[in-house]
Amino acid sequence: MPQHGDTDPRSAVDKLIASDRVPANANTDQLTEADIWAILEDVKDPEVPAVSVVELGIVRAVHWDGKELSVDVTPTYSGCPATELIEELIEEALRAAGFRNVRINQVLTPAWTTDWITDEGKEKLRAFGIAPPQGSASKRSLLGDSEVITCPHCGSTETERVSEFGSTACKALYRCKDCLEPFDYFKCI
Amino acid sequence: MTQKEALTEYLLRLADSDMILGQRLCELCGKAPALEEEMALMNVALDLVGQARNWYEYAAELIDDGRDADKLAFRRDAHDYRNLLLTEQPNEDYAVTMGRQFFYDAWHYFTLKSLVNASDERVAAIAAKALKEVTYHLRRSSEWVKRLGDGTEESHRRMQDAVDILWRFTGELITPDKTDQLMAEAGIGPDPEQLKEDWRGLVKEVLEEATLTPQPDDAWMYLGGKRGEHTEHLGFILAEMQFLQRAYPDATTW
Image (cartoon, rainbow over all chains, first blue to last red; front, side, top):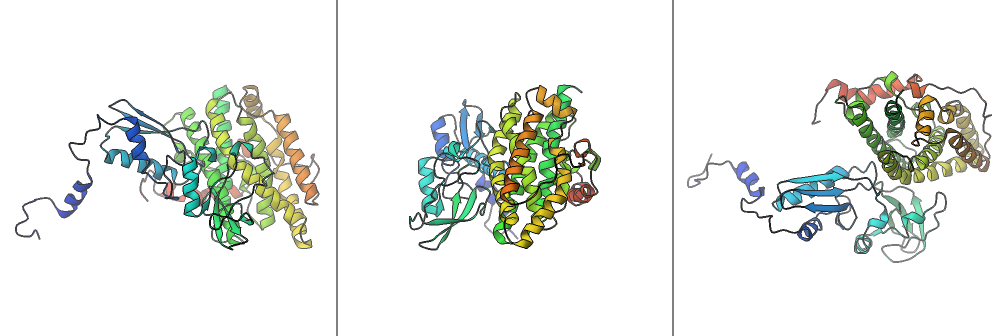
């Protein structure tokens, strides 16, 4: 039942939805590609919310000609289930900023490696409790994997691998022999 | 057979093999022998299904009859499936599961390593992505074969049994047919002789370290998966995997 004094004929649900809509006066004409990168800095990885999609190196390029905006995105792993969600989150963020003509392109080349994660991103991963990838992905060999993984909690290098795979495809499970805490290691790939 | 037809066929083989092995591994979800193993198996399966999708998408573009990746995976019947027979074999015990994985990973690794340099850019891009993942798979499955083979008396016996059971399906991995030849000539697929040498070399090395005895190279081999002639197991996998898509065709929300 509409209450007396409520002159807005729309239902509560409609009003709620309307509040999420892009303001009619949103003006994207003045925005530059740098502004767009700044917007994307706020889009976090759904599985590792400590880092943004930009810091992870998932966003490859942004093209903005004043009318159409296209964003090149690359998946981390072939089967990463977050890929589609990430694309949706990016599109959502850009639409919320007023862009109406947004296109997301998926690019496979050059393939994503952990080398694409920015230094800042790596530091944020560590602070979040995930050991960042160590060394260069290009130098990894098939059977040799002797790198020393540092515990993100206490900084000890006395760690051991519990499992080659962790909570997501991109991580392996480790344990610190000093502080005894288990932790995820963002695999170098 | 034109080059385009051969490429389409080849892509379906890659896609179907990844898809079926991924599906097989998923059967262990919730009942793997240890939690870490379960996570590992599901991650490997996820990689394979993701790679399958990449190959299906390319195949769907070449086929160009309105079918997309999902339709290729969920609306084709067993005789249209082109997966390697090895991938459809049941999980059995963990020795068979890991033995199957090792034989496949070794083939997959050398195949992708060659596809990375394919004259077809799209194939090269998908392969480059997949190769990094499969390197992990191979490292892991070869470690397991060694652990089980060179482990206890029981694990050795089971691992040797697994090698003996699976061996007859490995010939298909390294026996080229016309499609494989055409792909090699087009500079896309691996050179069949090289692939055979690499695969046999690595398998011999790992089995030796695992104190296991391979069967002879000229043992009798089942062939046929690549041309749609499958073992009885594939139909059961598809029945389960395709049920929802068959029962509710074109449903977009589950």
